[in-house]
Length: 419
Image (cartoon, rainbow, N blue to C red; front, side):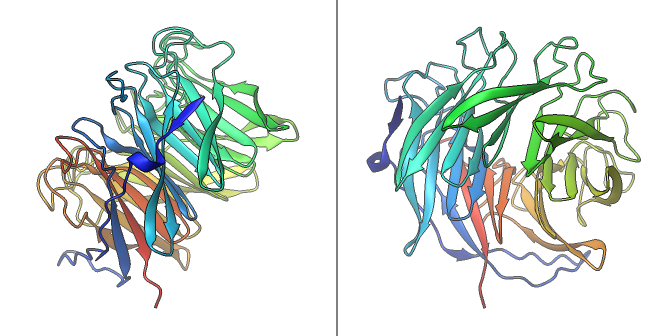
């Protein structure tokens, strides 16, 4: 059961050169980008469009987890699909659930792989308040239909099943960071396999050293047979310093390969609050890392690389113009030798307007390439709340942008200009 209002959503888009900011304190590699702006024309205040985003090839998916249902029910949530055409990026569908209820927050997390979209609704209460659910939609041609509604077999109130999502091929991974399996909010992660067109729960993973409050599963990413899971409130190094766990597929099961922590991890760094994975490289956020030069909560992101079964820290990335409370590392994405890292509280266009930074891996070193802001960004937009990357394109959520009403939200799509 689903609702897909293709005719009721129109993307408003702007085609403008991406902003390339040159700051005297740092240099940039000159790279040209085209910037598009995505808005749903049925957007309204407090929808928080852009709260999560995903892009895969010629398809983009944007969540609006506080969108109200046409019936009037509040905060049911919705997700919007856009497709690249010869006329540019165009709306394809608005996805909602037939059984959505007030407060479901459908669209709080989204994941996309080819013709399959997975959308989290952590407020859904089928097995108890805020237990959570995940809905899977399939595309045939340009039409999207709901294929499945997934619940944890042992789900309980407050688990927040669907707080994080990743999908690749026939594997769907779902985080439930407030599951109480090793104590209150210790967290867990569920793996579902698609068998003969049907999604079935396969395994449940927990941290072997998990403890109350760790929120294992607050973030995750999947690339092939490797799964990266964040636990940003893990206390091994210091209170809420954070950790991340790497699991690998071994025939029909998953085993822990390594546990990652920052070499200089400290109290409330939140290492693991966001994670990204590409092959043998992991990018892990510590958005509240303090820096002696930049200040408290300036934020950072760490690069780890795998050799054999061992992962080692390769680099610590910070913004070249970072400042206190920028929260650099709010969102991270990586593909090959390029990484995108956001700082939602960066202030170039006003307090907490936000920015994203692009880094490239060249000759064994991660180097800053460019910094970008929204073409029409303003104070409080939180540009960079969410980021997703595919090829030479990346999608950025600005969930508190006000064009369609206070905190209605927007998303911005950047693509490399072909010379």
